[in-house]
Length: 353
Image (cartoon, rainbow, N blue to C red):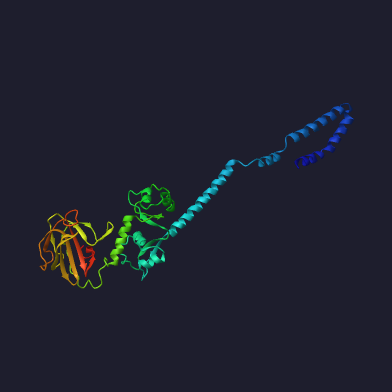
């Protein structure tokens, strides 16, 4: 295209060239041959220059035709990978949000109903929410419900992603990926992790089963109906350090309160009443009980010596025994039980704070 336009422009100069050639022929006839030769040479040289050195516009077309630089393709690949990773993270965030729900308990709800609603089991709900009494759930209370197969773990100080995975027989990389942990080595104590495919540890399962067993037999922390009208005013029988509370313990259920005190310390009556049930019992060691009336009674175990006998009437605070380590005991302490109509209750709910 350019060459055609170039020759067209040059043809505009032909009349002028012929005019000057005629002028020169008349004025300088002797020089005509030399001028003709010079003109021919100029035309040949000019044509050669145009042919050998094409214009810049044609050079630009040649540059555009070269192969694309490799770095441009790499940049496009990196961009596509970033988009893919961003979409993958969004999918994981959505899956994480759906995996753990906060359910608000409604009037008439029970753990059995809630477990059926979310197609899970009562044991898992108790474990996830650390429920000590399955009967004590109230409208407006919230429960954590896991909608995938697995369990929950509250991070403790010193936990690592590998120790947690080993505890629940799960995969460390799956735990890190599911919980979107940017740095699995930096776990924050107190936060909760979802353990996909995790299995509840044996000791925890035993504790949960003990809680359920106790609830089936009616051992509840809440005061039984009608008990307040006849409940005596209890006092602490000894002053010491609480070493074991009422509730699940080591895969079984602890039905009383253990208080560590020096050997031989006095044990006082928690409330006035009549002594009964004195003697030695398996596990309890040397024991006595006091009937306080109205369906209420107390039990004192692991004594080293009894200071009263059956049918003795005692007042509140009166010494009834000496602290010991009889029966199944690892050291001197008092095991105290508070009982209402045969149901063992949490002593801490009835002793002064």
